[in-house]
Image (cartoon, rainbow, N blue to C red; front, top):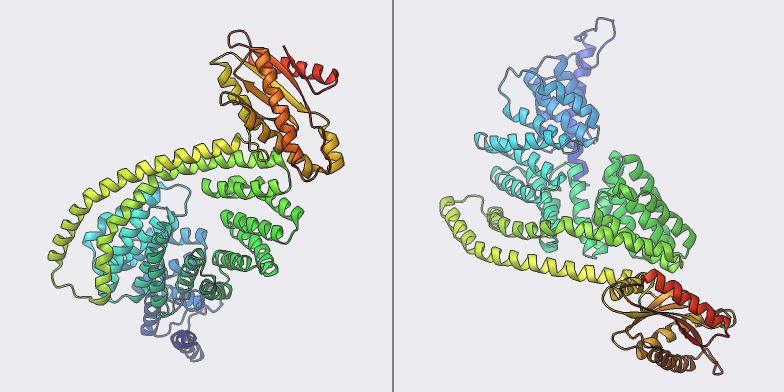
Length: 639
């Protein structure tokens, strides 16, 4: 309510301009265009009032989007009246308005016109405002070189500017480096800019830098610091009338609180952000805020509300061209359907995301989605799709680790590097006058030298830890990809790979085992009991085989054994023991009310690494298995 009153109060200045203009028109003091039509922006009101209006925008006493007509009028009016200096200021602020309206193509044309002009008057701060808009626009361009060049140019010019001008530069750099994921420079620019903003009493810029620092710490998983600075950003912006940046600060804080599972507090701030984005119809802001709120509703099991929001957000994100948000909303929709028991709908949406997987901007997003897809396909018993999902997840997870291992080390280094600057900012928040800056800098240098050895040691440990974790991950995913999910033995891929390796090293025997009359078990007792029989056989094999033997589920009720012995007597003795153990395990199954005679047939092919290929051995063993089954089953035939 207080902010609404303040907005009205400052909007009165815009109305004063309109009133002055009306009186001017009524007295006949207005110009006519050559075609005889009146131009409503010619016949200027008071210069001082226009200047005050522009100052209110610059000091965040007026919100750009809620007062866009007043700013557009001022821009047109100053041009018509040839108030050159004031017009360039209005044009620079109009650049910011276009950026907030997300009219990037119009903004590029506008900047080309005004940056190409020869400025007769010295207006360094206004020129920097144009360059700020230019750099923010370039951060979104497909070609990174122009943005990188302008950023370097502005960095090089910093020493020659006043503190007010430096704030503009640091503001531009903080935005650019955030948008281009250069975290180290984001923090450096934000901390330098915050220090100057505190000294100069620039409240709006303080809020801007607090939010950038909060976002950086959130990326570094320093949640306590992220929440602290996000709250500082909210508190600071709520003392201004900049509705957009206040809403963005609300969204940042709400999103961090959501990640920390403080859903109630998160919902308060996210709804505040959503209300503003709806009021000014900012599609990008709406998409992000509404997705976070939909996620909270989902976590709170309010599935109908979450479903409605997710569906709206898919279309909203698609219209705004935000691919990651569109796909994230589709994944959320699939999860909601799954919770509601609508499996077909969940699978359809999941398949739609899968068809658009290349639109994800990062490998980790793809890996996380494929993990969800694997669970869904497993639940639906679509084994081939599930296996395909887990294979692709391994691929994208590996790409993510390869891309982020170095970044994780750099992130740790950044935390140490900015600590001294952050301490300095904390002190400035309570005491703006620093009487002995040189003494502080010397102290900082001593701390940095002491930290250098610590940082070096920690970085070495981090590198070793990352390599160790990657090795564990590779081993884990390799095991998953080679294991039958039901029996926890090797699957077809795993046992074939093992057999290839063994054959290259030693003579061995390949056996193919088929459980007798297994289809009859499924038909009479059901597939659940059939699964228990498969598990019983796998457990019996584990109890029977020596450490030098391996086995795996070859497909359905067929198994492939890799035996180190090539002696026919030893082989038959092994399968006799296995038959006894298999019967024992099956006798313990509650599903069988009476003891059932459980048997299997075996075909064995003995070979050696010099004259037999694995394919040949398997085909021969399969032929022997066929012969065993033709001869009445429940027997072992060795070639």
